[in-house]
Image (cartoon, rainbow, N blue to C red; front, side, top):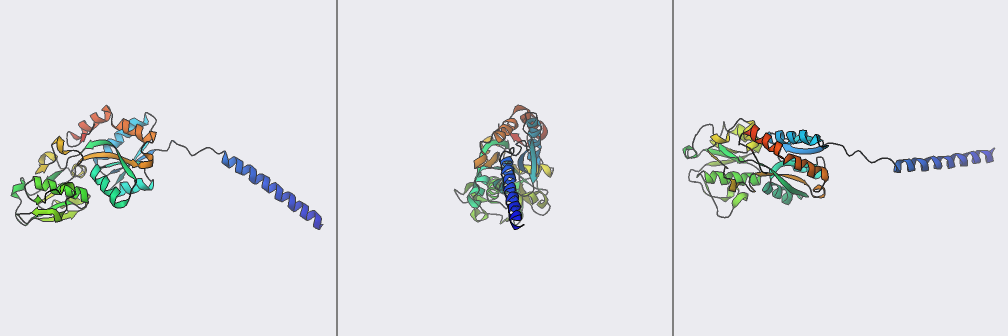
Length: 277
């Protein structure tokens, strides 16, 4: 009886090994994960997403499905890209990306340009920058590159003077002259349109200006000259460095930078946002 039990045990053990071997072989030959998942493209909330959705509509006809994912915080699209939660993003200019790569160690690279998005200084109280009184509050974005960009525009408006050579990376500490002793407050970019009820003037980027119904033609001063555009307010696509040559990413950008998408952008935004190709 003991011998029979051991024999049966050995037979069952060998049978189990056979089944395990077969299962392993089947698993090894299983098909790879499907490659037709939508390309995930991150963007800040606002009009940039409208252009991406039009490109996604057209790219699907060419076999590239794309899902457009909007973020309300400018820090999120790059974090999501680095983590692999999205495949591509389109919301930032080159200096902003360079600063994020430097400070956060992201392995993200700029690809092709997408939109030309001039910003402006807006006010609900004044029609000329010169009318802003002494001691008034002015608002700028609280991220380094767009904060510097705002200070440059306030300098262009004749309200402040920056230290020589500070450029786009200027901070409030680089204000050399402030004859009206204006109070410069730093606010999250998405909140700047709302701040117009509380401040004399605010720098507002075009996506948030569009959402708030602000017309660039009514700005006290705006980034308008083409020579000012690069790299300060031209948006770029960005991808992780190890995905920059991904054929689906390249194909989607090709569709985006096509004549139909250019026509869509010009018709919808009537000059407040322009194609950069």
